[in-house]
Structures are given as C-alpha cells and as structure tokens.
Length: 171
Image (cartoon, rainbow, N blue to C red):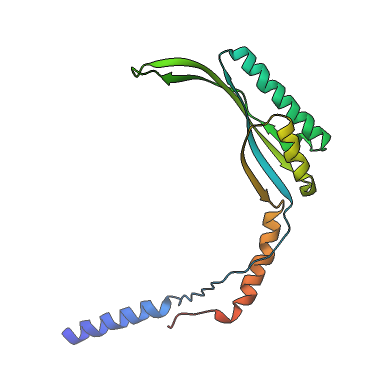
C-alpha cells in the first residue's frame, strides 16, 4: 500500500510539472552614449530688494522685473520662455545683545526663469542681466529639447553593443 501511494504521488507531481510551461529568462545589460549638442540654457534668478519701506521695495522689484522682460524682448526670447513667480514678502529681524528680536525691515523677492534657445546669445544675456541690476542667479542649466527622441538611438546602440552578451539561465 505504501508503494502504491508513493507511486501515485510521484505520478501526480510529474504530471503537474510537465503541464506547466517552462519559463525562460533573457537578461541584457549594457550602456551607450549618443552625443548631441545643447539646444537651450535655462537661467533661474531672483529679483530681490531689502529695506524698511515695503511699497518702495515692491516698486523696486517690479522695475527690475520689467527691465528683465525688456532684455528678453530685445534678445527675441519668446514670452513663453520667460516665467515669473508671484511676489514674496517677509519680515526680517535681527537679535540685539539681549537676544531680543528687533525688526530690521522687509525682504521682497520674485523668482524668474529664462529659457534661452539661441545658445550664441548667452553672453549677451548674461551681460544684460548684470546691466539690468539682477543680483542673484540661482542656477544655469543646459538641456536638449527632444530628449525622448534622442534616447532611442542610445538604446539601439546599447542593444547592438551588447547583443553577444545575452545570457539565458540553465534549465
């Protein structure tokens, strides 16, 4: 009886494993680079003013922002490539020698972003920003416009470079 149960169990296990499809795994690892020229430069900057008169400070940053828009217009930068945030206003305090907070004045600011498509105009734009009274450039980044379209040639090159390195697990 023991032998009969063991034989039936063995037949059942082999029938279920034979009915299941065998899965194969293919692993490909690799990398490739495709060099492309930079299409644009993005400049993030903040127009700021500090002092005791909040109305004067607001007028000051509005004037600086208007100068920046004027610079963008002269360089034929499309309006869609110039972005601006709302105005930020904060109270500024300093500590006296007794560690008391003493009102110093206000800090008023506005963040702006310029996307320059004509890379050759970068130096002119940088000088124009200085001439317009911009005091704080937070970052300058370069990029390409159609990155997703450029990714496909890199993937194809990686696959071609590593086509001989495909591994399949032993069965």
